Every structure is written in structure tokens, then in C-alpha cells.
Length: 139
Image (cartoon, rainbow, N blue to C red; front, top):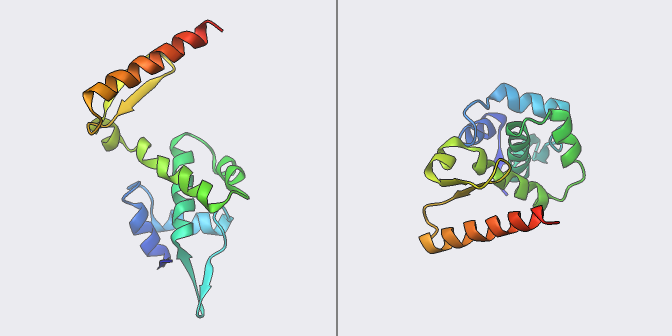
């Protein structure tokens, strides 16, 4: 497992959100929204697990949730779940959304599809979701 200083964690996270800075990292650490730092030798360090927590917190923040809400949702979650949450952060990065093809199916459902998906599969996905939405209205 990799270890990081607070400054290194901030630099890594700036790729996910340029507004993250060292002060934010230290604040989140101080308020206990992430797990306690690991002790390696005689130093306390951040690990990859902390990085996953920070990414999950960033995702909740981008959704408009409060830090208290994010903390409540993360407490007691297995690290695998925290990782899954953090992986969704890329969906909130504007450059990712602009590269994708976006289809608005109704006011509640928008599909963002990567250009790597074949045209045939895109059509099938849109048709399937559209049919599901029509079925939802009949229930």
C-alpha cells in the first residue's frame, strides 16, 4: 500500500478536483471525516485507503451534500464500498461529460455514453431505458 504526506495527497487529488488544497486535506483529517492516519515507523501517514475516502467525500460534495452527511454515509462502510463511491467521481468531472454523448430521455433521466461504445449498443441502451421508463408510467 502506498503512503503519502498531506501535501502529496493534495497533489494527487488536484487531478480529481483542482480546488482541493493542503488546507482542505488537513481540515478533513482534523474533523475526523477520514479514518485515523496510519503509523509507519514513527510517522503518521496517509494511505491509498485515505485517498479513496477523500474521493468519496469529493463525490458527495459535488452532489451538494454536506460534510456531516458524507461522514454519516461513510461511517462503518467496508473499504470496497468506499472505493466504489469514489470511482463515480469521474462522472462529475466536466471534461468527462463533455467527451461523452449525452441523451436526455426525460426530465429525470439523462444517459451519458462514452464514444467507445458502439453505435448499435448506444441505440439499444437508449431504446431499453426508454421502454423501462414507459413501463414505469403504466404501474
